[in-house]
Length: 297
Image (cartoon, rainbow, N blue to C red; front, top):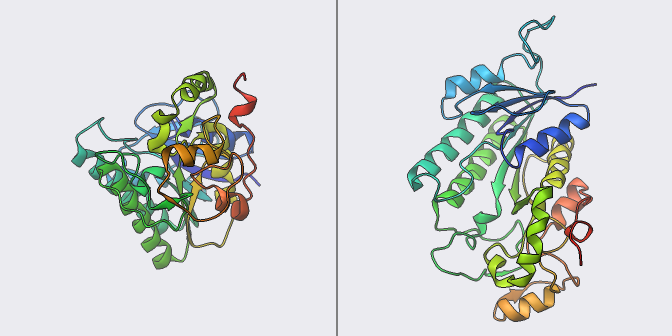
């Protein structure tokens, strides 16, 4: 049976790949965004997620592609995926980052929950760990970064994502539904693998993100797995690849850049410092697009 999904932010860098992955796996998707998505299988409904009325209305509309479809009634929705957001600091003023991201997420989760949609997947961020957008370079409390880490950011973007996780947790408890937050690493599109030789030449340049990355296509897989895994209530998952975006062994990165940071367990030769263990073990993520298959040695 076709699964029906409402996807916010499907026109964005990460969203368009996740939407395409869902379509390829037989999903019917309605994209809510402020700009159209160039995908013939998906209709975009131009929606301001900071307007609660628009969100409720959009989520109770048809998923059909055009106005002459034989049935324009609103169908039962199986899941909502919420990626729409201001994607980082320094695009709009800090208070706008916080307002749009927190109010938008509240509106999306509230509408989905009150409309009886049983599964919600939201985009959180690796920035919640407080390292990426710190005012000055800042070492983590321990490595690898995992979902139990005591998050403590100072920037408006990461703060908004932590608030969104708490919002998700509250609604999951209140309505007894599944809401999973994906802490997404640095998203890499297929054409961006041409940048990796530059990354290798300057390994310090990606220290702030602990060399994390997630192939946009593999993020689509993680999104689908999150939709299809029932019964976990509220959960947080790091969404990252199986190793770092560096050609240096993990032990060398630790020795060179984090000599005083506690390492909580033994790590594999190229194991990521942004741990994806939980998403592999709980959701069954199997990496398909590692940089080693896309970058010439």
